[in-house]
Image (tube, rainbow, N blue to C red; front, side):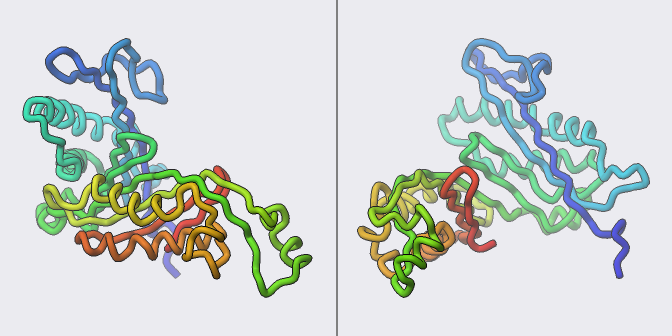
Length: 284
């Protein structure tokens, strides 16, 4: 049996880095007075860039895999100048930054001073969107860098739709349905503000599959079908299928899978929240 101490683990660390937009350029915020936002807060147009780095390995005798202050310093140093330069270039040319390429450059820079393998680096421009570059090799070694020059990239975005449904199985009696589903068996149904997070894996390529493609497909395949509908009565997908959150996640995955593949990406998962406390991800 493998000793527990030799089994690799994944350590993640979130870094929030404020930047301020001045008249001509982006500058890193001064000070660090609020640990939740990573720096000082000033009046004006500001942004807080949120990154999450994941490193893999086995802890040493200290119990640490990597001291988190080392992770913070490596990621902050790698991200600050590259993000400021990217922002300057974006404002100058009026074209969006290739975020996957930017993250890859930051990950490679940070990896050189981190004593563990960088497995992933994520950027969250909002609570409802993320982009993550993921690595199979070790960025610290030149041969591995070559193998990971085009990292696997995961895009995620969260959407919301409102719908009503009734949980009911025709093969059960009225009493059995009430016992099984309780208030969710109300004959006239009940409503939810559903949230759906869609994760798509893409091979990095400039102007390849992006968030605009993801939004277009979710709007066409999910929102137009289910938003402000009664799932049992208005939607053929649930005419003979109980619209539980589990089945909604599976149906949404089935609707998106083909269209995503047609655009040279891969649908990795769909996660649906029925309430803040209940969600289902398919596949697991």
